[in-house]
Image (cartoon, rainbow, N blue to C red; front, top):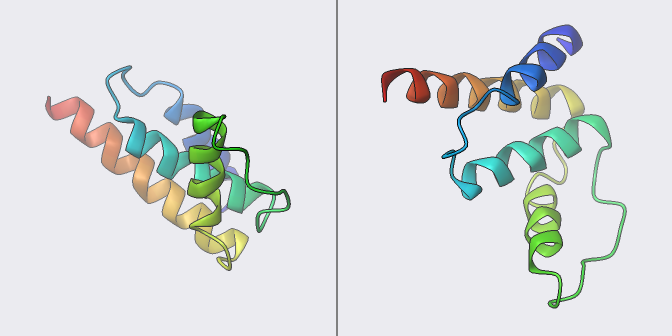
Length: 87
């Protein structure tokens, strides 16, 4: 699964620029959970909205195993690539 995950992480870089921030945050959170595990830092200041949103996206996946997060990440990348291909 690690190989397929890395392959889809590369494919994610080819997503169109108009991919929504919400979807980018979902991918970010799943990627961090798959590669690092549970959040291991404090929540960023409200003065750093971008970092705070990324932290929240990662925190939303807390408790998922690396394998589960990888599977969800692969599924999400496939969905986004299919949506981009049909638009």
